[in-house]
Image 1 (cartoon, protein in one colour):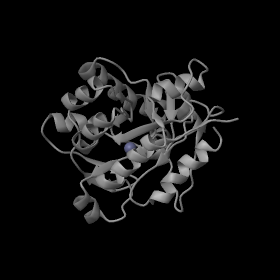
Image 2 (tube, helix red, strand yellow; image 1 turned 135 degrees about the vertical axis):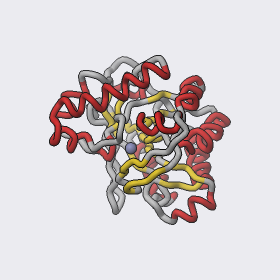
Image 3 (cartoon, protein in one colour; image 1 turned 60 degrees about the vertical axis):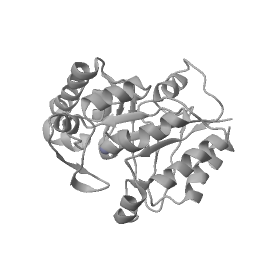
Image 4 (tube, helix red, strand yellow; image 1 turned 90 degrees about the vertical axis):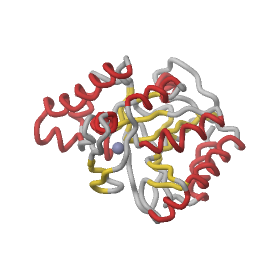
Length: 257
Ligand SMILES: [Zn+2]
């Protein structure tokens, strides 16, 4: 019997009026819908575990509750701290944040930064500062790596080879070391852009590599015991994902548990 572990990837959780203004946008979800999803997990007795616990399980170094899932918040947007953290703290849940370090540097210096994302194109939005990331870590969140500039890593490799990829992750790791006192163990590919060669480069530095997909119509991809820790599958969640679709993730996972 194969246990499936849903790994839910969020980008923005906005107050409902802001989310409504954004429409059915990729990467954005309103807070009421987010609360409903979290209540669903708790009511159905799903346990939110850390990324590290899932990776240990894949490495046969630890066990998981039978209904285990993981929450990821990508890019390090400010609303991860202002909107998400207080709600999850109240529910006794912690998650993993994968910040774009150039955005954190800009926010910490009091400026904005324009980054390219697959979900929203080129945008400038507020990021968390180092101080806020430190508070997340102290609250029990894991902090993962997501490159310095949110480059598409396979494209970066095409342009500049191994050295171009290494520069992105060395810069990011160095900043984490300097400001948080540790280097992240887990890496999430920006926009899901990867190749066998980028995997080989990044495996030297991290304990896991997470993919990301954004298919429409929605297709779900699951992490299970046979999943390689170098190709962690996840589900992107935003306002285009209806509640029935959300429930489907857990039905399909629980059936196999
Ligand atoms: Zn990203």
